[in-house]
Amino acid sequence: MTPAKLALAVAPLLAACNPDQSALHPAGEQAAGAATLFWAMAAGALIIWLVVMGFAIYAVVGRKRPRTERFADRFTLIGGVAFPTVVLAALLIFGLSLLPAWTEDEAPDLRVHVKAEQYWWRIAYETPDGGRVETANEVHLPVDATAEFVVDSPDVIHSFWIPALGGKMDAIPGRTNLIRLTATRTGVYRGVCAEFCGASHALMAFDVTVLDATAFASWLDAQQQPAAVTNVTGAALFVASGCGGCHAVRGTAAAGTIGPDLTHVAARKTIAAGTLPNTPDNLRAWLADPDAIKPDAHMPAYAPLPAGDLDALVAFLSELR
Picture 1 (cartoon, helix red, strand yellow):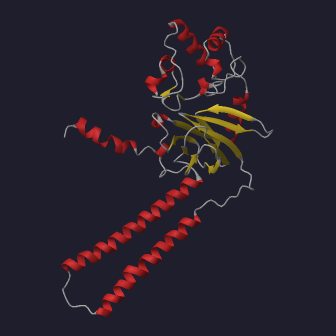
Picture 2 (cartoon, helix red, strand yellow):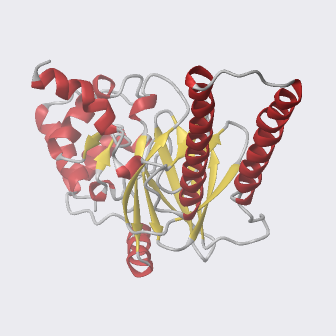
C-alpha cells in the first residue's frame, strides 16, 4: 500500500480523534459522567471477555475428565445467572447515579434558547432584565456555570449535541425540551445536529466558545449593541437587494426574522452554520450561490447582481463586528 493510500485509509480514524468533538475528551460535568460510564462499561466488558475466553481455552486445551451433574448445575447458576445478574445490576446502579439531579424549580445560571432550523441554529440569550440577545450559529458560555438550553424546532426533528460538554437533546416541532450543561474548561468546542434533517444535515454545525465569567459578560454586552455601521452605501444596498427582508442587522433598516441575525456576523468564526471559515472570499461565494455550497439551503442566490454590488455587500457584512 502506498503512503497516499494509507493516509486515505486512516483519515477517518484520525478525524474521529478530534478532541473538540469528542465525548471521550470531556470539558463539561455531564460529558465527564458519560465518559466515566463508558470507561467503566468498557473495563467491565473486557473483564467478562477475558473470563469467558479463559473458560473457552480451558475447555479446549485443559485436562479432560468427567464432571458431575452437580458441578454443571453450580457452574450454570454461578456463571450463567448469579454473575451476569450482579454485574448488570452494578452497572445499572452506577449508570442511574450519573443521571441529572436537577429539577425545573432550580434556576440555572444562564438560559439559552436554541431553535434548530434547516440548516442553521437560531440562538437567543436571556438577560437579567428579561430581554433576549439574538445571534446565530455560535454558542458562548461562561465556565463553571450551569446553562439551560431551551430547544425546539419550527420545521423537522433535529438534535442539539455538544459532545465535549454533554448529551444530546432532540429539537421537535411543537415541543420544547430542556437540557442543562456545565462547562468546566475554557476553549472552543464543536456542536452538531445529531438527527438527520435533510440534504445539508452534515453541514449544520456550530462552535461553542467557553470563556471565563468576565470575558463572557463582555461578549454578551457587545452582542446587545447595535451594529456599528460606517458603510452606509453597503447598508442601503443590503436592504435594497432584499437581504433585509430575511435578515436583521440591528441599527439599520434591516429587520427580517426569517434567516439568521447578522448584526455581528463578522465576529463569527464561520458562515453557513460551521460550513466555511468566515473570510471575504467564502462570504462572496456563499452570496453568489449558496445552494452549491449547502444543498437545499433556503436562501436565494445573488449571482445575478453586478460584481460591484456583490463586493459592496461583502464589504458591508465584513464590518459587522
